[in-house]
Amino acid sequence: MNDPLQSLTGDRAGAALLRESLTRLAAQEEGTALGFRVREVLTGERDVRSLADDPQFAAFTRAGMAAFTQEWESLDPEERARQLAAGEAWLGELGEGLDR
Image (cartoon, rainbow, N blue to C red; front, side, top):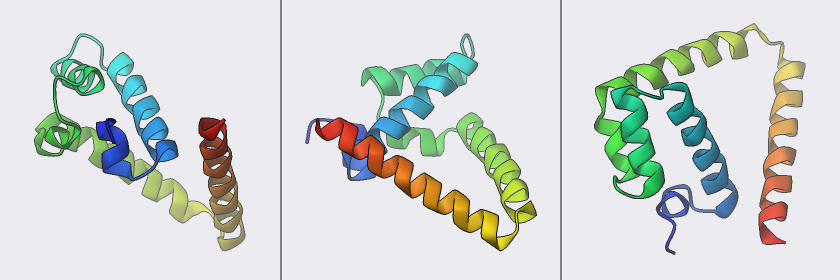
C-alpha cells in the first residue's frame, strides 16, 4: 500500500475522507504554521502521525471535538440514529465510487 493515509485508515474511502479533511484544514489555516505542516502531510514530506504530536493540531482537534460532542448530545436518539445511517451510507457510496 503506497498511500500513507490509506495505511493509517485501512481503506480507500477513509483515506479519501481524511485527505479531503486535511486539504480543507490546510486551506483554512493557509499562511500559518499549522497550515504549512498539514500541507507537508498532504505532499508526503511529513508523516500524518506527526500531527498527533503537534500542539496546534491537538488544540484544533480538541475544539472541533468539543463542538461536535455538544451538537451530538443535543440530538434525540432517533436523530442520532438517522445521522449514523446517513453517514454509513455516504461512506459506502464513497467507497463504491473509489472502486469504479
